[in-house]
Image (cartoon, rainbow, N blue to C red; front, side, top):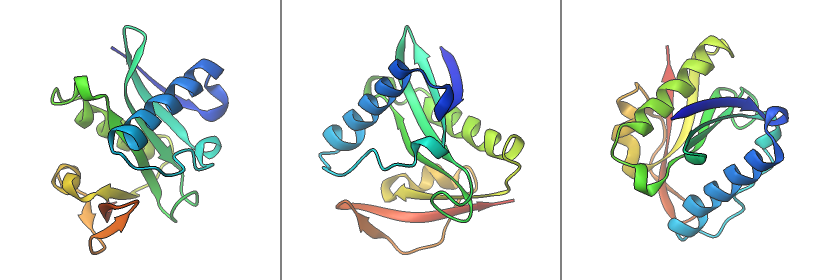
Length: 147
């Protein structure tokens, strides 16, 4: 498995196409949730992904402060269905948080988590800061990690 973290301008056309295709497969098709998955924040974001045998198996988007929230943020987090349950999600989030701390020099991270994953995010220190609400018909909760 090989890990990459790239700014938008560092992505090749094929990498960008593949990342957007995989995100749509998970967030629109798998979750049966028609919404505008490509939201215009990609150019301002960093893209962390893992490839195994030339296939993207895990991804998250790192948003600097001011893009989605005053704090830095992680979003569009996924592990391909056939690769779940093997610790890849934990490694993905750890790598994303490490980049925010070391490269962006940020201490606060806000996420909009699907509610069924709130325990997973609590394991990294995230705390709920909102009530549960529906976003695209899926229960979500806002969470904050502060150091």
